[in-house]
Length: 164
Image (cartoon, rainbow, N blue to C red; front, side, top):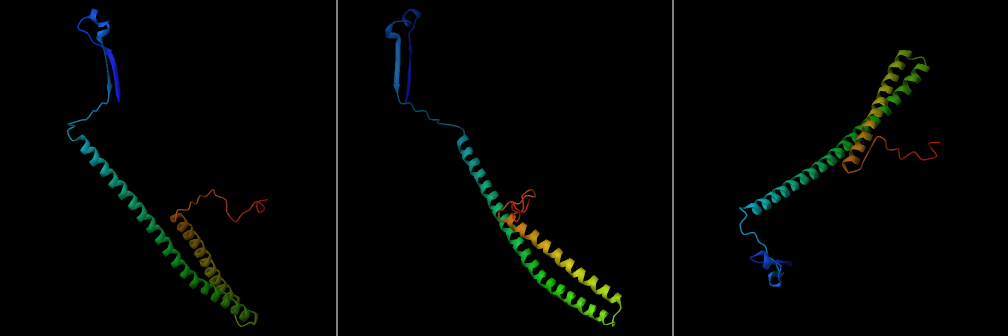
């Protein structure tokens, strides 16, 4: 709805008289008949923008799935590697035990003990390195699943009593 009021007269003298007053009240309809294709272009641009947004979202989702799958595959591979490495550590410790028994019995020189100790330490060092890689892969999986991880976050294992 719109309303308007005013004065209308041919001369200035008649302008201030009562018959010069005009008013109107009623519905108003405004419609653009010709816009040169501007609206069609706006609709097309909005559609293209929407398509771009959908494509970007789809790519983000696919990237997320790929990151999760990569992290899971890494964890599976590292778990298999850890099982093999644990057997190697067990074998190295058993070998060191046998070598120490041979040394105590006087059958073997101390140099043999040192060599086997170095091998056992190398196997244990590899197992520790592998455990670190598994923990890093677990963090990568948590991050890929949408969990946040910041270096400044306190360790969940620490409680208030532990910090005293």
